[in-house]
Length: 94
Image 1 (cartoon, rainbow, N blue to C red):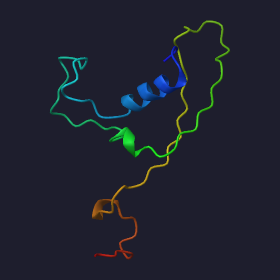
Image 2 (cartoon, rainbow, N blue to C red; image 1 turned 45 degrees about the vertical axis):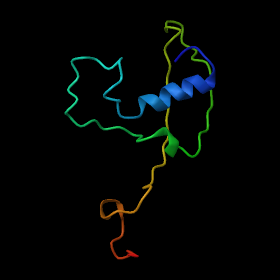
Image 3 (cartoon, one colour; image 1 turned 60 degrees about the vertical axis):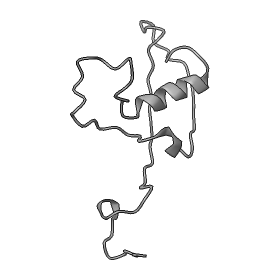
Image 4 (cartoon, rainbow, N blue to C red; image 1 turned 90 degrees about the horizontal axis):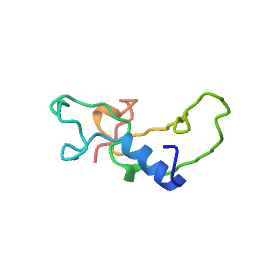
């Protein structure tokens, strides 16, 4: 992620947080596609806000392509289901 503009860096980051696409030609051939994969993001269309702060890494013996990311995430359910309702006393069924 060391090069390119901030838009392309964010696109790369968001893509890396999503489940791998089984038809992706760059997916390693030996990966077990039947095993579940835990990912933070189902679809980057669900991202509603992004804040970015950039800075330089001031260490002397670091590769120029190295990066440190600190990611803070607020997650919420995009639809109400029994598995994601916190308080079962507050259920409105329509």
